[in-house]
Image 1: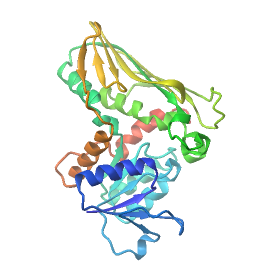
Image 2: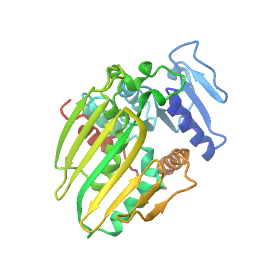
Image 3: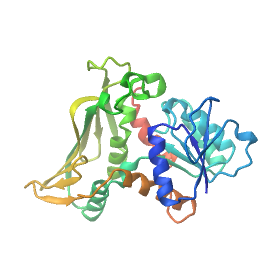
Image 4: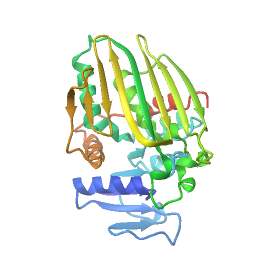
Length: 308
């Protein structure tokens, strides 16, 4: 298996770990823009795709979001399947063209939202499927953490998260929350959004976002921020007869009586990356139905970028 990597940052390294866990003989190539780029064991640096006589099974696009569109065009023209780190792109300017290009070249695409492979999210997905008659009255989602703690030893103001011109901002970084709500409940009929820069982090990017998603019979509220010192990542689903709380940090689900409905004590987040990568590879081999394709993920991005 030959895999091309665009952007060798921290998230790409997680995808590489996942790949090697699935296929230890995978051959990895990194497309580099600088001749003095770092050499990494078992990864071949390349500088010009046209001069390389290699057939790639797929490419991982994990560079700054603002550059995704450029490489989706380039790789689609070369008929290379696409594994795209979320969010798919940073604006809606070219999405119709990109969707058309991917379809024209018969490219298989997947936008990497690894929380779809979190055991708690999987439990709730199955729970909702089995309990379709249960009436949902309200959904509350909260995801807040402290951006300076994200990459210890690195000035957080220089990373893409803090810089809108690189595709940063809490609404794009925490795209997962919008993605799994869309996956669990479908497309809302109406969306309202507040996005602001309110903290003392001294960054240019949006550090607070609040989404109100109106569905036919209930409303979901999603709050995202970069400045909470004590991390919290929860989903609260208020049914007519009970409340279920999903804690994605403690990896457990409680009912109204605070009884544990589900818990994953041995959970490791890297497992979501491995399971996600395995799913994508199986979809390339027609062993799995495609999920979260580029065009599907754009529907979530339209909610994410509401009024932008």
